[in-house]
Image (cartoon, rainbow, N blue to C red; front, top):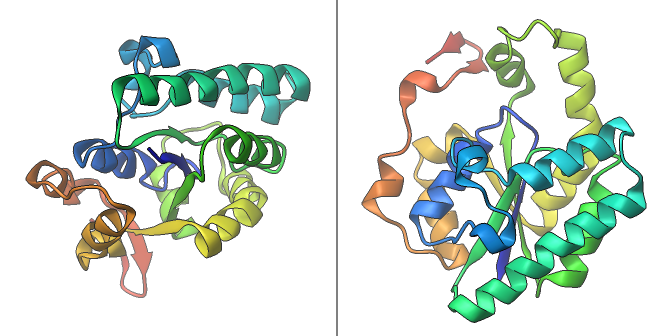
Amino acid sequence: MPGIAILSHWHTASTLLAKTFQKCGMEVGNSKTFWDPSTCEAQCEHSKLNMIGDQLSLGQISQQDAIVQISRILLAYREESKHNRWKFFGVKITHGVQSKTWPVFRSLFDQLWNNPIYVTSIRDPEGVVHSTRNDRKWDQNRILDSIMDSEPAVQWIEKYGVPFYFPKDWRNGMTEVKVRDIGLEWTKEAALLLNTKRIYEVDRRGLYA
């Protein structure tokens, strides 16, 4: 019953990736694992884990408090997976790859889950900037600083885990290949998730949808 840790920078199609995994058989959790549909379903993200990561990154919570809270949730997933005989289970977090959060999350995933499968989504930085264009709190320099801060963690997962490149892997069929390699079952529902109107990427021809 391997656990899947989807740890990505925000605006890299991590929601699309997590929903794809969910459609292919990854259990996202229940009330006992602190999965709350009212706050988790929309982004297919564990809102409590993500909030802890955000607070840790901003220095609003001590590392020890974060460890206690994260451990409680990860242990609950382990117990629920045994009780419910989940073949695969996992969480998506977009505040787990920052320099202040990655060491904590990686250590706890390694300790508390049995050989976790690390997964990340990777997108061209200009695509991330473009997709954040309507958020006035994030100018280009701040976004790029955030991406650079998460780069060591993302590169580690890229080397030792399973990276998904957006949108390339969805266009060339590699998403299905990688999902199957993990052991999940590819489904028609997963194939229908991609909405090309929401893809914004930068190449030599400029922005395209």
